[in-house]
Every structure is written in C-alpha cells, then in structure tokens.
Image (tube, rainbow, N blue to C red; front, side):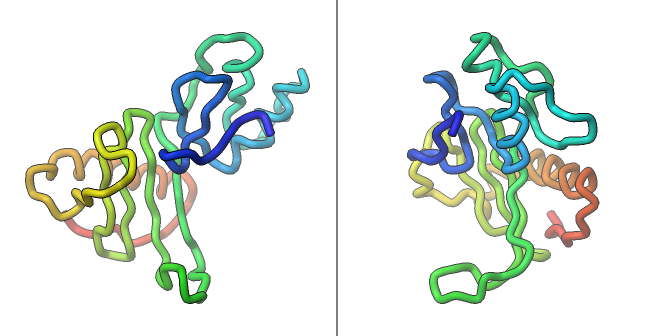
Length: 151
C-alpha cells in the first residue's frame, strides 16, 4: 500500500512520514495510480495523495475532511446495529451521528485515544455546528439522504 492507515488516529493516513491527512476509500485508487505515474481517469472520484511521497509537496485540492459511514448495519454482536455517518477533519476533529441523534465528537489533537466524547458538551456547541454543517455538505455532495440530528 502507498500509505499506512491506522495508528492512534483512525481514518487518517500517514504518508511518507508527513502530517496525517484524511483519507477516504475512494482515494486508494487515484493515489496508487499516481504512485505508478498514471493519470487518474476522468470521472474517477478521490484524491491522488501520491504527491506527498513522490514530489514532496502538498496535494492540490486535498479535501478538508473524510466522509465516514455505515450504510447497512452489520448485525453482528460487536458492532453498532444502526446506520451512522461521520467525518474526520484535517484540523483534527471526529464527528459521527446516528439517524437524528448526535453520537460522537472528539478533538483528536487533544484526545487522540478518544476518551472524552464532546458530542453532548454544550461548551463545544459552536464546533459541533461547524462539524454538522460540513457533514451535511458531504451528505448532499454524495447524494445521500441520511437524516441529521437537530441542533
């Protein structure tokens, strides 16, 4: 693989020892093609992050966040049995909601192990609004119809 996924900040990729970037599954193919020196075909979704490794520069038009989702519940004992949507932002926030209900919100810069869920802490209401607005944009941009919670 052209990147390492995981570590203590899930949904981020560490590319060539550089700062983690939000990575969506649709970024795997363009990045792999870029590492092979092949242009991304027109119409292929995703971001080519190969520039981090080959050209040692920031990726142009890199997304500000990664869109996360569980569309169909897995229905196994160790999983959430409800659909959810979320984002992880480049500035270090993770926000996820269940249908019509806030669920998780973490400041990954200050809490990389996700110990303090801030989703229901009124001190972070403005940040939650910002994250929900960005999540709503992802939902609209992808043609999703997921019902977000009211704030």
